[in-house]
Length: 325
Ligand code: NAD
Ligand code: LMR
Image 1 (cartoon, rainbow, N blue to C red):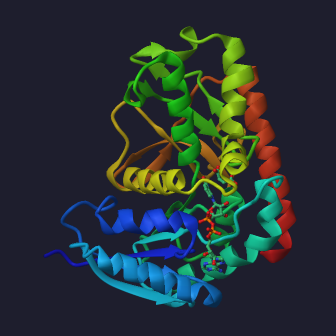
Image 2: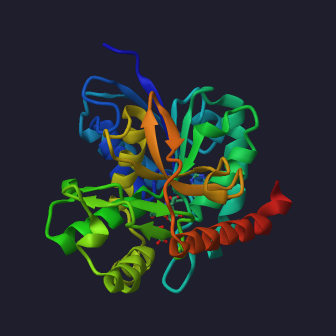
Image 3: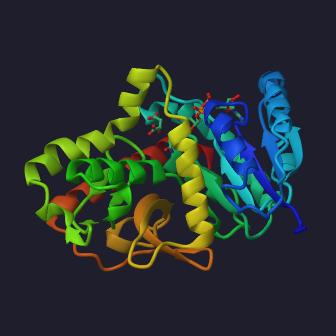
C-alpha cells in the first residue's frame, strides 16, 4: 500500500466540488493504486452542507479514500499538501463579468496564499479556479514568497477543452483528432482562442474552416461560453469545470502528449512581450512535473493585438487589487 497523498480542496461544499471530490476519490487524478487524504476547506456557514458531502463520500466506500479532514482553517487544510485546488469563491450570476467578483473574492486568495506559504509542501501544485482566476492566482502567489512561482497556475483548461470541442464539431471529427489549440490571456471574455497553429488530423485547422467563421463565430463562442451556460442553467458551469480541473492537474503531473500542448495560466516570463509576473494563459508543454511556456510561435498582427488586449486587462485587474498586496 502506497503512502497516502494529501489533497486540499477549498469551496468543498460548492457546485464544482460536488463533482470534483468524487472524481478525486475514485482515482481520476493519481490513479487506481494511490490512496489519498482529502483536506476540505469551507466557511463555517457551509459546514453542515459539507458534512452531508462527507457522508456521501463515505457511502461510496472508495478504496482509495484513506481519510477526510474538514476544516474552516486554511492552515489545517493546506498542511503539507502536495496538491491544492483553490475552488472556493463566489461565482458570478447572470449579467456579471468575472472581474466583478474581484472585490468579493480577493481577500480569500490573500489569506490562502499566506497559509500555503506557511504550511504546504514546498513542491505543492496550486491550481486556482475561483474567479477571476488569473488575478486570484496572482494574489495567492504574491502572498507566498517562500514557494516557487512555478507552484501556481490558474485554470484556462475549460476554455482549452471548449476550444477543442467547438473545432472538432465544426470539422466533424472526434476531439482526439484536434491538436495544438491554444487559449491566450485572461479567463475572461477577452481571452483569445487561437487556431493559427491548430491541426485537425494533422492538417492546418485554418485551411479547413473559413476565416469569417473563425473570427466572428468561433472566437466569440469560446469567449462567451461561460456566460451562455449561466444563461441556460441559472448557475455557472460545474461538472465541466471539475473535469477541466482534473485534466489540468493530471497534465501537470503526467506531462503533455508528444507534439501537443495545453493552455495554462502561469506566471509570465516575458514571452511574447507579456509583462513578467502576470498570470497569463499560454500554450505550455509539461515534462517531469514542470510546465514550460511554448516559445517562438509566429504570431500575426491579429493575434498580437489580442494578446496585448489581454495583457492590458490583466494589468487593470492587478491595479484594482494592488492595495491588498
Ligand atoms: P459555489 O458557490 O457553488 O461554491 C463555492 C463554495 O466556496 C461555497 O460552498 C462557499 O461556501 C465556498 N467558499 C467561499 N469562501 C470560501 C473560503 N474563504 N474558503 C473556503 N471556501 C469558501 O461556486 P462554484 O460553482 O463551485 O464555483 C466556484 C468558483 O469557481 C467561482 O468563483 C466560479 O466563478 C469559478 N469557476 C471558474 C472556472 C474556470 O474555468 N476558471 C469555471 C467554473 C467556475
Ligand atoms: C466558466 O467559464 O464557465 C466559469 O468561469 C464560470 C463563469 O463565470 O463563466
